[in-house]
Length: 113
Length: 114
Image (cartoon, rainbow over all chains, first blue to last red; front, side, top):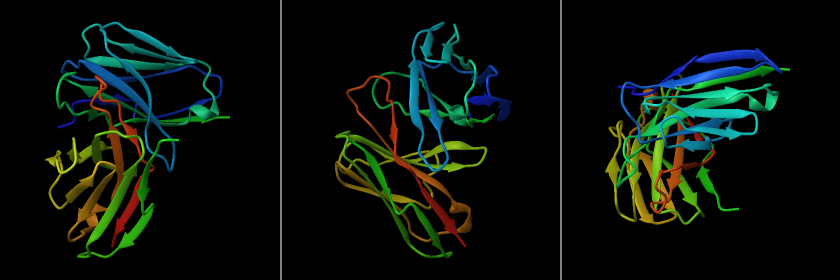
């Protein structure tokens, strides 16, 4: 059972445009991570959000954790070709002990120059 | 730089063959993981280890086995490969001292079973 749904599955936009991708679940997560994966490489951690309603910015990328900690969004301003990649969210139900990550299905983003 | 490496990067094999994928890390992390990635299915956990000789099954462990004889190394074996094990395989590490289990991935092994 896939607990984290990401949308859209594919997104292709022109350089300079803004975009938002989503990560949704029916269950509550204690923390949520976003990764970016480029072709031929493994995922690389971008950010971890922990508190409901939290907003974190990483240059042109803005990450938000939903108030109820069931969903998250990633907004990119003025997209650049270097933003192209597979964006994965991953959630953790507990921050204690041996909790594993649950990964979403990913959004494949293509920025057209 | 501290890193996670995987060998081989690409492998083509035939049904029924035994295959071993190797993962090494210089990050000093105690936790290691094996995932497979299939189009549209994201990353699914095969096995994980929290310390040397500690082995735990993930959500899709059938047909796979692992070995953790040293902190820096975690190997994944397919005893008798089958075509539906064709996928991209990733090793990852994390540090148990960090609260949020952020993971660091290797570059992946692309495995094709004919």
